[in-house]
Image (tube, rainbow, N blue to C red):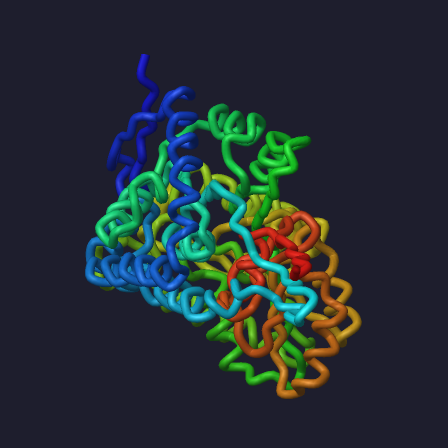
Length: 458
């Protein structure tokens, strides 16, 4: 019997689309085609691969209305934000711009006696398992450099954003990337694990939950397939006494609430110097109360539903547990809150690290705010987490902020900004956030292997 997956729209709970799941045999056949196509693809000049990837990006850029509307239906992001093309294009363009330099051989010697150098060789077939929360941008982080580096790519997109995989495949194929070089497959967990455990692919990039990352590592165990993971976070913001208060409130609250809080590097906990705490909370409450929760297809809506009722249920549970343990909620229930996917954004004070809302990943529109007396207390609290993706510091003192950043267990340190992926900087994490090297020139090192040449001339 054919297995299918239904994409349930958070707008109204209806089935937005249905896709057939590939059988195990069909999935392995697709992987075999990808392997067969890889040598010819890698033999093409890197300039040609770059041009084709750029062309695919241009095609997506001509269809941003489709992107925005489909995202609203699939995962609830309001159409007023216009989709993800800005970040998508920024990342694709940067990775294309630095490709030839990043992939160039490292020459050690070229004398009358020897030619010695290190080249970068593609792994082969790269499996990209992309998440639903930023489905275009997270996918392109690996898809673009993997293809440019000479790998073939299999994309397995999240069940909540299946149409994104369709859209990307259409664009890359229309640009001229061969169908076997870039494949978008609908796979279940068992088949995905089998592709890894039986070494049908050569590299895997996974963005998702800690549990999902652990499953990927177990499936690849003993195969020596490189595993790159980005498993979310509990990202802190720290507002020092010398911070620009208005800028800190506006940016940190946007970092906490944008996309209904469903951001891997979204702000989930905020520590404010005690001298600014009351003002910060007052301004933060006003910021959240100015948001409009509603149907994401309404151009006036600034916050749509969470992508799935189950996700909203977890956030509500964390909030309710915190309130029962003495936390204070500052936002009254909004009219559009239906007890399901539509969830009132919330600010909590009187919180502690004994509460799950300050410890576990919430991945929703809630943030706890705590006062701190100094840098030492803030650093201790920021490091009191199983995750380490990003941390945001707010201060007029760049040198001190950098010194604080040196002591934070995290992958990225921000000063006076947050919730942003700079394509020139390595996207990475530590602790339960996982390990990997996304974006920047380092991504090309991760998506290729070094191959040494020691050539003695006759």
